[in-house]
Image (cartoon, rainbow, N blue to C red; front, side, top):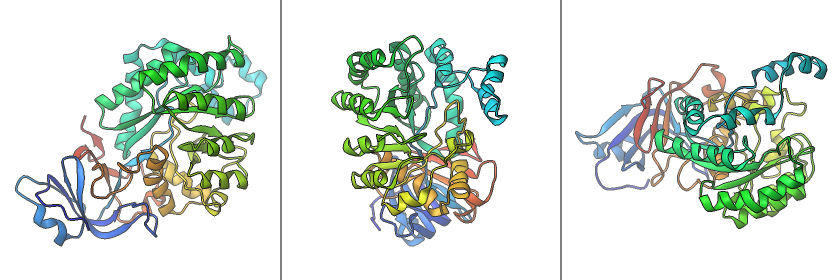
Length: 419
């Protein structure tokens, strides 16, 4: 225990289960029975038992009784495309019904990423913020306190910057951390050849975004029919030169060597990985890259090859999970992603919780600040209306999260956001 002198501003007491999710926890979640937590100045100051923390309570201390409940770190949702306009519900049901391309065309249903460009381009900043903030509020109520958010639905100067500006507004106006990612290489416009757009991206867009300081990461989509592994290397190296750390959409629908590029460039994460062979997973692990498979998109699209967890773990890869909230996977709930990870991909409850907290923080270079309940870290904490941690994957309930604390302040109570 790291004792800190002084009185606490907030204390959580009597947690039936306290999940510290410390990185080196042998049980993956750092389980403490009858755990207590003290908070001051927005930071966790003490984690321990009643005898350690009760003396820190004063008349001014806010005390939350977590008797019979589970206390966990706020979720870290490390892969989303949450800033977008419009909807692709027609495409979603066309795929469920397995409509032919002829029938899709006859019904006038537009499909694919580029169909999101027009509604996203057409919204002013505040309009795009309003649509996005509704989704982000749902995320907060579901326990998410840190969120990665990508651009990529503009593929032009104005809209890409507009999406990144919305990220800034989200962080300013809502109780959530935003890690911003530039995904100009999400595709290329209908009216441009890939080579011409890549030249524009590397010569103009990436330096512009780098100078703006609006993005921490640079991402690209590496897959057949999208960007090749060599394309992605060039794009991500330009991003590095502009001050952005690489991330990569890799091996989602084919294997073309993207994981090797992510490993060589020491990317923060390589995401999807459905088709990644063992030798690629091993290279990622050796390079310290976090693997981020996405249970939500595999479920939403009825993926022909759902990702397999066992090879990732056997090759030593640290695994995070995330919602991938986007028009093709309209999911804002990390508890639902945990359910999918366990039921459809063989995660234990402990591994899924770790993947949704400290591993997600690692995928965003934020493990020193969030993702676990330890002295010195941000007091980003959630309380589940559950008696044991396994129930987060076993109880198919609407939302198990009763309380969310962000930077030491209660921002969700009784499953309702207070801002």
